[in-house]
Amino acid sequence: MHDEPRGAPDYLLDQNLSETNQNFTFTKAHRLLDKKQFNRVFQNPDKLICTKLVLLAVKNGLDHPRLGLAISKKNAKHAVTRNWVKRVVRESFRLNQHLIGSLDIVILSRFGIVELDSSQLKELIDKQWAKLTRLCAS
Image 1 (tube, rainbow, N blue to C red):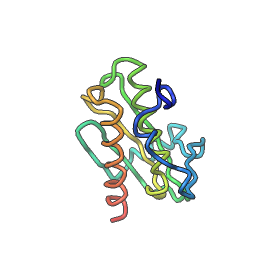
Image 2 (cartoon, one colour):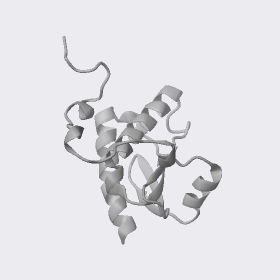
Image 3 (cartoon, rainbow, N blue to C red):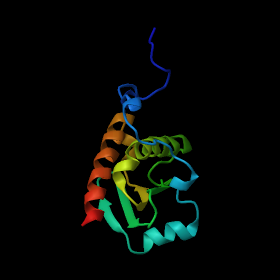
């Protein structure tokens, strides 16, 4: 019998978040909610393209980043799969938001996203946060 919470991803089990002073929340204020907010990002974004994801970002003038997700049926046919991708990306965003800065970010899925497992997707998106921060800082 395992002492771990059932269903908890491996990357969450080995982190000790109580040692930091960061606020690791993902509230409504951290989300892109309407078409107007998404369109602002789509108009003239900084783009970061990798094999399985596309990240679009613009500065938002707030003191925190905001996230929007567009996981298409074309790339992830089943709702369960699309929701899994969103869950993993939101969790990674929640844990890394203090590093990202004041950006509005939209993440688009690409072909092959469903071939990754949770740890691979987590590793991929974590690398993209660091690249995106450097890209938008320049």
